[in-house]
Length: 355
Image (tube, rainbow, N blue to C red; front, side, top):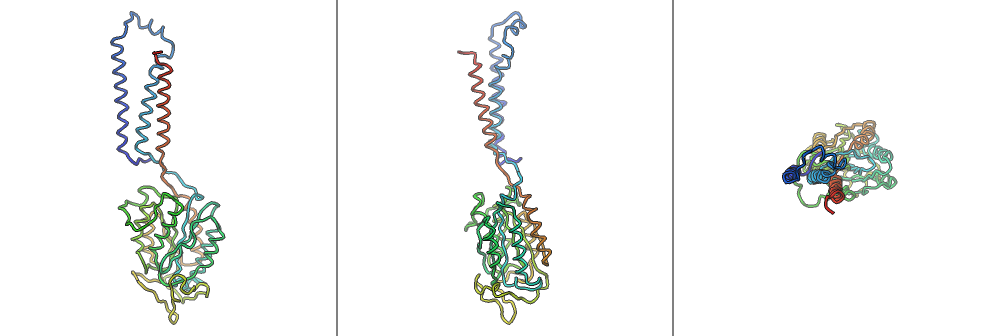
C-alpha cells in the first residue's frame, strides 16, 4: 500500500486530542459527582454493560476520525490486471528494409505471420490496435476486439521509405488515450519532469514495437520515452532481422507505392533512405530499443529468424498478464469512517442519559 498525500496523516493526531478532552471531561465529572460510601454498592446498582455503553459512542467517533484521517492521505494498493482488461498496441515497422530476405521469404512476411498468430491467440475481450510506421506513423486500426479487422490490416501491410520509431511510440500512446481515460493524449505540450518508470504506477495498456532498423525520421525514440513514462505506459520492443541483411525483395502488394509517403524506394536494387539519425536503417538499433524498454518499464526482445520471432510473440502474453496498476481506495476508508460516525451518533442518542 502507498499514500498519495502522506502528510495528510497528520490529521490523525486529532484522535488523541479528542480522546484527551473526553478523559478530562470524565475526570471533571467524577470530581463533582455524588459520593457514595460504597463503590461496590454503586456498581451493583448499575445495569450490566452500562459502563461500556457510555464509552461506545466516543469509541466509534474516535475510530471514525482515525479512518477519515487515513482516507485523507489517499491510500493506494497495487493489484494485478487480467489480460482481458489490457489494450495492446502493435506498432509494426513497414519501412522498405522489411523487404530484406535475410529472413525468408522476407522480414515483412514473417512479421505479418507472427502478428497474425499473436492476434488470434489473445483471450476474448483483449483490445488490440495497430500502428504502422515508415516515414511517419499512422493508426491503422484503433484498439478493438474485432479480430477480423485486425487480421485484414496485418495482411494488407505495405512498405515505404523511412523509419519513424519515436513517432510510432507517440502514436501508440494516443491510440491508448482513445480507450483509457487515465491516459492523456500526447498533444503539443512537452512532458513534465518524471521519475523512474512506474513511479506513479503503470496502466494496464502497453505498446509492442517491432522494427528492423534505426530511427531515420521524426522525433528520436529516447525523446519520446518521457511521454510514455509520464503516462505509465510500458513499451515492449522487438529488434528483428539479422546483422547481415540480404537482397530486398517484396511482392507487388507489399511494395505499396507511396502508401505511406514512399516513392518506390528502389534504385537499381539498392535502398534509398533519408533523414538518418545514426545507425544503419537495415539493422535493428538494439541499444536504443533496449533503452526504450528499460526506461519505460517494458522488456526488449531480439529475433533473428522466424522461430525466434514466433517465440517472442508467444512470450508476450505472459508478460502482459503480469501487468499491475495502482488503485486508489480512499472511498473505502471514507465510507467506513462515515458509517462509524453515523453509528456513534446513533449510539449516543440510544444510550443518552437525557430524555
